[in-house]
Length: 197
Image 1: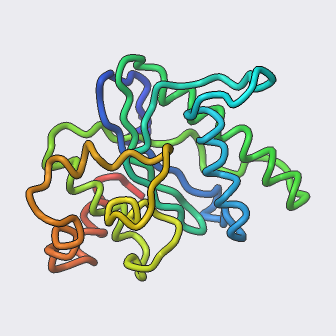
Image 2 (image 1 turned 45 degrees about the vertical axis):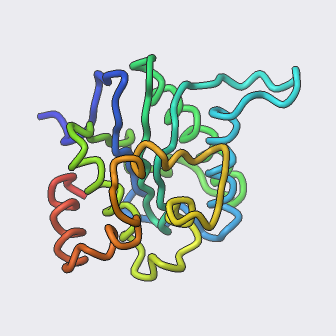
Image 3 (image 1 turned 30 degrees about the vertical axis):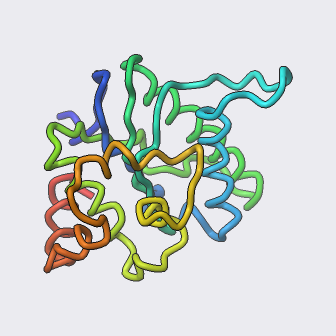
């Protein structure tokens, strides 16, 4: 029986909620430097090369939102033309990050629970719902550093993060939209049940 949300055939253009966690629910980020490294791997594969010596493959994918927790991560990704772009990107990042982690912490073997999971975003309402879920993941979401919420609130800017596709759908302030959901625990439980987290 296939695992839930283990997507094999992606579409383009399309949004996907991509997530994974540590094998046995172990921590995959032990300190801030690990989260910085993880994000830098996306920069390596999504931003233009700075010099000719940079031969890493580039993927036509945008990060619309993210949240890095100690033992799992959430990404809201958009691929425009290549249906294999997300797969290539996530394999490249997961392999490089696992090698970094195992070398740094003198461990070996699998870091992640398995292949990344992905849920296709079928409509605008679901897209907004997932962006809210991702940003509400940390209990201290308003001040949590390792999420893209600061980009949505205009407190940070980066060539790596692209909140506009989501923000353009909202007639109201994003923080109002975020906090308009009265039962945060119910939202998190609903999405976790849907995604089998």
